[in-house]
Length: 548
Image (cartoon, rainbow, N blue to C red; front, side, top):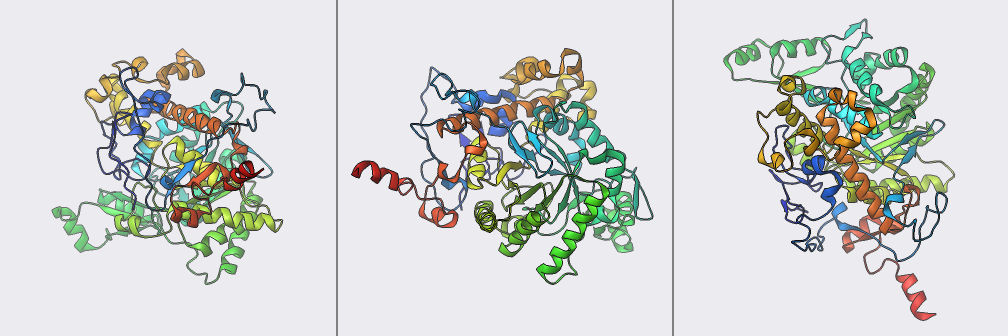
């Protein structure tokens, strides 16, 4: 198994805990004082693309040996000629062949297109406390950056202020708050999107009807089949027995059962301190794929009948049958997006050993998804636009995923990584604006040295501060969460880094990226992905030059 390095001396970053392949710690804490690459990028922005201490140091890569199968074992091609995708906008002259002219915007969808300033989207931010507490940071940041944000499952069901009568949602204050927060800062050109996810409980509560009546067809509605972190329904943990009883009354499974007298007594004595809330499994009464397809198509017809113009599907790290089923159903239903989440991503709460041992890891799952889309395309069936998810955090991850899934992949779905700027910015805001510490859920009472070494005021700490102020106006800055400004800086680093990688591959727009822009760093990865090994890639072109 690949083990990511714990420290990067060139960038001056280090992980508090054990790093995943993404470079994030396996356990990412909201009160972390630094400083993994994503954490530091939230403050420094694009400056973190380069080694530290310029003028006093040189730097050399240590990441040249790739063992095992994973995105780490793909390498990116560079070329000495070409400027694909540049001619249509500028010229192919040397003066225009600069990385800042690379267009990293993307478009997805069928009849109604959705435009995004950069090819990322958040993972589903649903009923967890993390999603609720830091929503303003996540939502405002995504709106300012112009990429889609996903409101996850069960937001209505866990909201004590929501009114659900006779199986119908009549009022959903938390859902309304989340949507309004994004819409306040979305540009008039509509870059990005709000995607609202529906699981079995949401469907039973007829959240779809509430959405279309209250918010209209501006919302993309998403059906959920699964995720990469676990192969059971959504979960959260609550520490109050009253809340556990409330959730049980809403129809959820609570483990242990708060209505059991023995459990009640154990809770009173402190032997039991929390309760896990679980969602139901979908499609448990269907035995064949044909039945699943029939039910799915009927649900899509129902949503279109309600008035939804854009519909997406999220599926998890299931085997090849389920992957093919998701791709074919999404194609036949003419969905706007299919998100495929591989094992190796992250979550707010999943059984730990399940995370480690179930499902298909991201790289082989995404490689096979490309193959299945190609098979449909060759048969004259248009495949769905894809978002690939499962352990992404850096700009090279974006390039590799988009290239591996080309031309079908339009977005990279990032779960835990965009949360880190929200945590970090909120902690800094809690120190510099102590009157807002409780509101933003800041954990610090003073700036740690990892932050104060950069600056001691918002203007000196956040590389993205001035850009955000220019965007929203000086009078609005007091309303912008620091977490959103940190997310803006992190997204700017991703965008700039992606531009540079694309320029080196001579691809000046995302639609020009292809699988030919990748090489496999070992034979095993080449076999799994179909991406040629380093010295096999372009061998035919090399021989044509040598033998002509």
